[in-house]
Image (cartoon, rainbow, N blue to C red):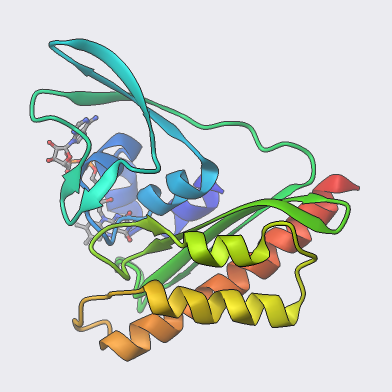
Length: 199
Ligand SMILES: Cc1cc2nc3c(=O)[nH]c(=O)nc-3n(C[C@H](O)[C@H](O)[C@H](O)COP(=O)(O)OP(=O)(O)OC[C@H]3O[C@@H](n4cnc5c(N)ncnc54)[C@H](O)[C@@H]3O)c2cc1C
């Protein structure tokens, strides 16, 4: 998923120069790696004068350009757990053109036990002050057999959590609806991937 997401970031020039750590540390709500790392359950290794600490992605993003980094700290590593069999992912990003940030993006990682969803992380891009987990929508799906009705319920719930800023990419209503649509697509992709990976 990291590779697939990277292909949709900006343009080749920026992709060749930007770093994953910089994309995360910047705390820009439009950057894609924050949601990818939230969905993957990544942890960040931070180093500063007081030594080294490892913190989960979940809780690291505090607001627009605000993160859990102190001014004298740098991120030196990103730890991404391997996806276990029965796990699938979906990364969907609506962007107007090559080189643009997301109008809205949704990243999903989910695990299946049989047909039951036994774990799911849904993370959203550019529809709030920073990337965030849609934890209420996750709760609607966890422990359930995911069908179209549940996907729709989760998508509607995602819309309630979005607080996008209006800009040239769209107004609040449009971006909110696009976040829901990206989430529907990502859940479906993750579900198919999880079924394939369990075979
Ligand atoms: C036209 C354009 C389109 C773009 N589109 C997208 C997009 O679609 N998706 C996307 O995700 N990004 C996009 N970007 C953002 C781009 O990916 C970021 O500029 C880049 O990822 C930032 O990473 P960098 O390595 O260049 O960091 P820098 O620009 O060098 O740093 C960014 C900030 O983070 C700090 N920093 C950098 N590395 C670390 C570290 N290891 N530890 C602590 N602090 C650090 C710096 O001090 C600075 O404050 C776009 C940028 C442009 C200009």
